[in-house]
Image 1 (tube, rainbow, N blue to C red):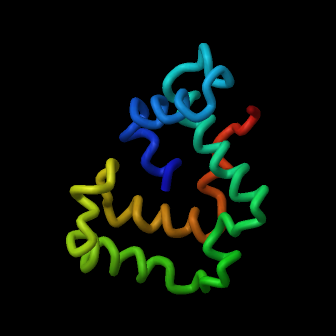
Image 2: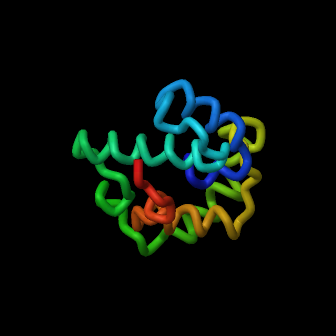
Length: 114
């Protein structure tokens, strides 16, 4: 979700990155600093040998579109997502997010080099 929300909260993720990573992000743009923080979270999950995809949690991929539609149409207001999530959800980006989460490719689009 961090990668998904980055475009809507660059300032906040850059701030957190500077607090957590300090000198490692000195001189980086806010977007680059946000990416660095997300990469550090990914590295932490990998170091702890925790799953980074829904597939690794044995979530079947065959119903991802229906689940995304269910969240978008029936649950996002119950969970307060329009108020709590920085990025506006659409049915299209919700489906895309679910597929990326299942495949573990959401974090793969980042260039993690720190």
